[in-house]
Image (cartoon, rainbow, N blue to C red; front, side):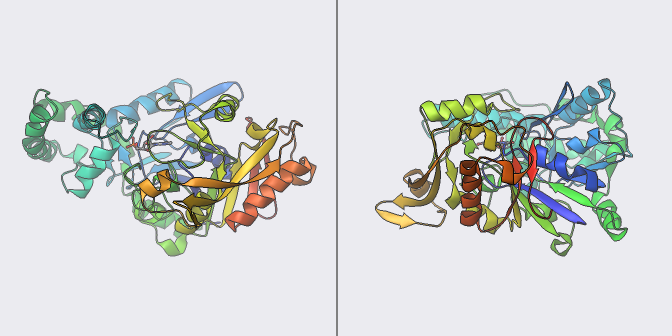
Length: 431
Ligand code: IMP
């Protein structure tokens, strides 16, 4: 497959890294297309644990090129930290296996500051916070769209860099002091702090759209790795409780400079239940014992912030919507084993909103918050499934659960995750 997208089909943390790992052997290049260090996943290789935020985990594989494309936002200090930590553990990273788009926007120190200050203000004013990761992602995308941002290419021209920071702070400083009550920032200090990373990042900065299109022309296989999930997409998600980028499949084209006509497959990743971090509506959320059980068994704590994730039953209304807006061709259903031991398992098939049955994921977050899920209840299973590697060998109740999700989603489930280890994955049908 020349260009395959891996996209989250829920609110993020679906286990995309594991699916990525399964597809990796057939790929030449792995590309991150949106988001920044708000994303996070852990990859376990043997006894080694690696935490990734920005660098695609493909870097652990020999002879793969990893690309942080133009749709991403990158904080130089964080990227360098991640590179240094990987290098310290013997991972080879240089300008030949990691490329950073010259067009990627930079997360500046004042983005992190305003993200955190804005959340604090929203909370204390009673307006209610978004529950962001506090990494400056939203404010960075705000500056990108407002045409006030700085891009990776600007690291290579210090005078222009300082000019842009000075212009941005001329507007931002009055806000920082008047609204957030903090000291104004000195443009020179801020610019120097970030420019200090320029020499070390320079070898990675490249025209990645040219590189990727050239690679496609040579018949190379690309894996386009989405961060977060379709329901956190800035356009299609549960606005305003979303991230600030296009986490749907569409982000893979604008975020890389690859034509939509080159995309050959979109694999949507969904857990056999649902999790969400941060605020926002979540119709199938389980606040008591069952939810706590899922959290503990599924180790549902954020990689980036350590926050406990909210847990709930599988939501077919959400998945149908994600399949549509992300053009998902096939689903990878992860963490089925976490449901083992539940006497019964539930699937939300439709919502009741104000006495009306609603089949379609609503745009209005207040309507979604008022939705009562209508469940189908199915028998659970007790047998451990972690060592099962063929669909036919799963307990009948687990098989029926997967088949029912497939029916409701309207696309085939090609992969089923059954445990923590790298190989704990069932493949069904053709890839
Ligand atoms: P931000 O992306 O830090 O601005 O946060 C916006 C919303 O997206 C919050 O609800 C976050 O919890 C959520 N979010 C951001 N990144 C991730 C992720 O990698 N997994 C799950 N949720 C995320």
